Length: 72
Image (cartoon, rainbow, N blue to C red):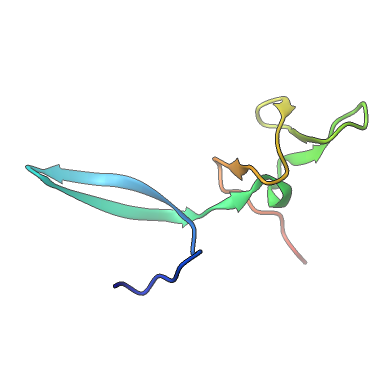
């Protein structure tokens, strides 16, 4: 087993394919929509809204961009 623990969610991308072997590179940690910098409340006051995609998203969904809000 590697240095990762259960629940350690991350974005991975295929870096290379050599015959039957595939190598993967970790891009970054997954970010929930509720923690994304692009997520806000919709103008009509309804649930979360993604400013990047211009559509509603679930609070517990995942951001494909991985842009986490600054917690400071």
